[in-house]
Image (cartoon, rainbow, N blue to C red; front, side, top):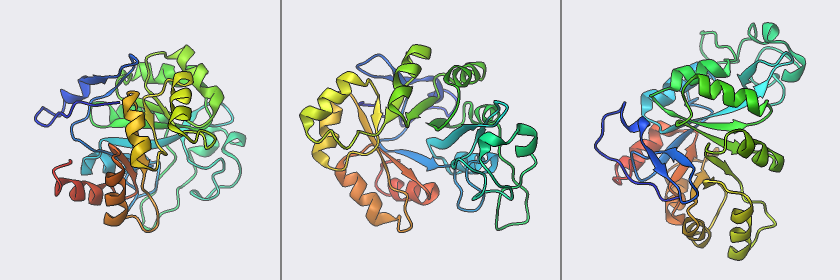
Length: 269
C-alpha cells in the first residue's frame, strides 16, 4: 500500500486521518516515510507487553506498538506473547489454564524494583487511543469479542491485525470487513506470479516477510506495503540500512528510540 506522507500536522489530528488502499481498507495514515513499530512495546528498560512498555513506545514517538493477544481460562483478553506464563512471570502453566483472578496477581520478571502485571487488552486500547497505533499480533482470542472491544474503545481506525493462521483471515473479513490486516507470505509462494495469486486470495494491506527489493516492489504494485521485522540480538544501523535498501516502509524493532534517531538523521522520520 502506498501511504501519503504527512509531515506537518497536529498530533491529535493525524490519528483521525487514514490512507486509503486500492482494496478499500484503511490503515492509519503515516506521519513519516518509514513506520516504526515497537516490538512488544518499548521494552528496553521495562517488561514486554505491559502498560509501561506501551507508555515508553508513546514517549519515544513510535508509530505503532506491537502487542500479542491471548485469552485466560475464563475469557479475559490480555497481552502475552508465549502460550505459558513461565518465561515472563513468577507463575507457571498455560495462560489458557489460568483464570483472570489468578493472572492479575502474577508479577512480571524485571530488573528493577517495580512491580508489573499482565494487562487487559481493553486497558491497552484506552492508553493508546489518540497517541499511538496498535499492531495486534492475534495469537489466541475470540474474533468477535476482540472486535467488540476495539469498537467500544473507538479504535477502529488505529488498529491493524496480524494474522497467524490462515483460517483467521475469513473470520476477520466476515466480522470486520474494513479492518486492515497483515500477514506473512507463505514460503510456498516463490515467484512474483505466486505473490499475485496469494494477494488475490488474501486481501491484506501489509506483508512482513518479503526479503528482496524485487518482491517488495511487486507487493507495492498490488497496493500492499511491506514492514520488515528487524529485531534481533545484533539489531542496529547495519540491519536498519539493509531493510531500507530493500525498499520497506516500516520496521518492527526492539529499539524504537534508537531507530527513530537513525531515521531522523536520514529525514525518514
